[in-house]
Length: 459
Ligand code: ADP
Image 1 (tube, rainbow, N blue to C red):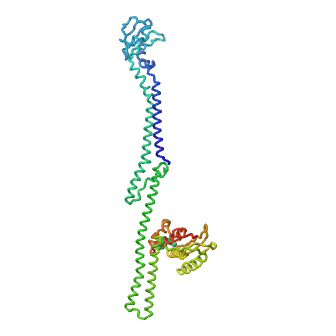
Image 2 (cartoon, rainbow, N blue to C red; image 1 turned 120 degrees about the vertical axis):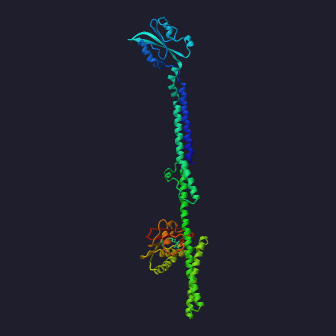
Image 3 (cartoon, rainbow, N blue to C red; image 1 turned 30 degrees about the vertical axis):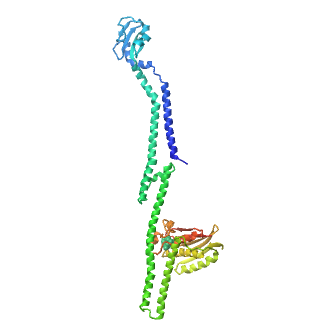
């Protein structure tokens, strides 16, 4: 499994550990090599101003006490550090060096002596007594900082890594999760429009949350289009009920009117009575047909449509059917043509059902024809060992938005819904069912206002 987030967390944790480890090692190394000794240079630096004055024989009290004596050992000035008086002689060598007794008597003091020069000639010495802590602090504070510098830098790098990681976590994980959560709540409440940051799509694949966001958005899109379809279907079903009621009402009213005519003796002659009865019979047939159609739709819906597939010669079945359809279409004042671009072959079909499909498609082409001169063309060609049958028309066409749904039951495209063309939205779903039961596929192609092409294959 490709656990990107897990890997990244491991990398972050490892980097922090490595940085801390290296910085601690560097600091320890520096510490072990640190020199706490007192540096002459540092001492020179802190008394340099005083020493300059002394060389010019200006003996001020100054910050650090000192003793000045000549080359012969005569004390020239005593700032109160040793027990010599001015003019007294001292042992030069003894005074210039630091012996054990000095260290014992002057704990935590440093004796620092300098040669005094005047006009390039040595003319005496000065001995300072400086508190050790002054020198140690001054000289080693910067060194202590230096020692801990790698550790400070390490900690700073670690904090930066943690901050960067937190920002990443916020932007790439928490924010999308929050959005997914609020979008989910929206979906529960029936609102499918709450998007989870679309810009995040650019980072898809960056981590698992990216993949989750992407899948979530796919799901939301799917649910949204389902919701739209369901609303359309609901509307279509309501329309169907009103259509059926309307279609049934007309023949029933006619039957009622003619029956009453007969009862009330309006048809007096046997001829008139026969006409009345014939009308009643024909309207009853119409009702039977309509009810049968509805029954068929509901059977198809229950997957109980009776289909008996038999082997037939294609030409034997197809050409007479085309001739029949030609008469049927031309009666409606619409041009009709058919082309057979395949050699004769055996096909496995239920003739009655395939005829039903073709009639349905042709009737739709007639129904959704434009006012201008209409033409319907049926083509049969061989494709992958099967026969592909196409029904083309130059009618009103179907918009691309409707095409994916025309085979759904009760679905009626926008144009036919808004126009007064009657229909149930069931015909194409029955066609799809029949063709699929034959092991084939049915498709629809259309350019709005440029007509339609329906096609299906038979094997
Ligand atoms: P209906 O009873 O509404 O015709 P169908 O299932 O046969 O139901 O067709 C579904 C929808 O597909 C129709 O309502 C119509 O909008 C569209 N349609 C089908 N055939 C055509 C066609 N040849 N030209 C334009 N639209 C068509």
